[in-house]
Every structure is written in C-alpha cells, then in structure tokens.
Image (cartoon, rainbow, N blue to C red; front, side, top):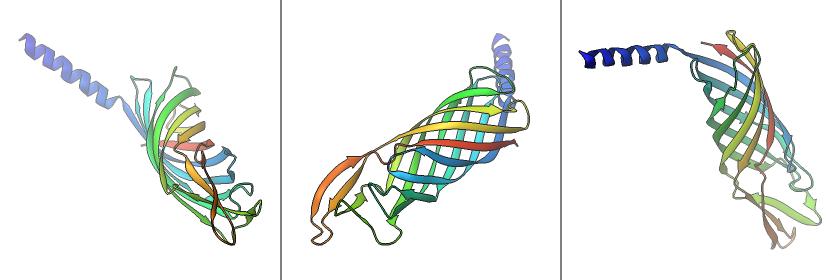
Length: 201
C-alpha cells in the first residue's frame, strides 16, 4: 500500500513537471561588436527555447548564419568569412518578472569558409593568409534581457562573448612565397550583440 502511494506521488510530480514547460521558436540578428580581426560580421539565426516553469533555467539552441563579413585590412585585407554555427546553451533567470535578466553558458560548433574576395592586398610588403581555421568549437558566455517575458511573444537583447581555439596567421613573400612569419591569433574570440524575438508554440 505504501509503495503504491509513493508511486502515485511520483507519477503526479512527473506529470506536473512535464506539463509545466514551454517551448518557443524564433529568430534573431547577430552583430559583431568586438574583434580586431574583423571590420564587420552580421547574419541571422534561428532560435529554439525550452523553458521549465518551476525551474529558473532554459535550454536554448540556435543555428547561426554569419555570411556578411569582412576581415580588417591590418591583418587579412581582401578576405571574408562565411560561417555557419549551431549549438546550445543553458540560461539562468535569477527572478521572474515582465523584464527578466539572465546569464548563460553555451557550446557551439562553427564551420568557417575564410577566402579572398578578389586580389589579396599586401601588408607591409607581405602576403597574409590564415590556416587551421576550417572549423572550431566555441565556448560562450551570455548576458541578456527578455522583454514581455510572461506573454506568448518575447523580445530578447543579449551580449555574447565567445572563446575559441586559435588559428595560424602566416606571412609570406609575395614573389618567392617563402613563409616569413607564422603566429597564433585569436580570430574567433568575438563579442556579439543579438536582437531577437521568440514565439510560444
């Protein structure tokens, strides 16, 4: 008898837990604001959010298409990077209100296509190019605000700092193509601002 009561209580708790969730889908714009190797990088992303009503956490996933970019003339003139990324993060909400601040930790995988848009310009009479940059994993730290948080439509503003592996910046002679210098650079450590909207499903 006691066992049956315990099983019933567990079932009711799990049933309440399952039905106290909300799933949202949406989209956002990503704007690079901090990376000395880029002049700019922007693009859209598709968002998904899984929220537990009785736990101040959400599981967030997204696919990002960063296909409008230009690398800076100081390091890689004439290059751009069309990147596709996907991954997930866990966000923590310290309190519940109409405007909710949150912090999050995430892990993303990026496929990079760094290539020259035309003739590659010289830097200090050298030709620069990048290697070891085809793909990378990125750890991300995010802080944000969710507006209209208690309604079916939410608006989000967030800032994300990414931390990734380093790539190789190689300088070579434009005539002989002899490698003159090779050094590690943190080309994928970036600060992004993201503006988005989420719809409850």
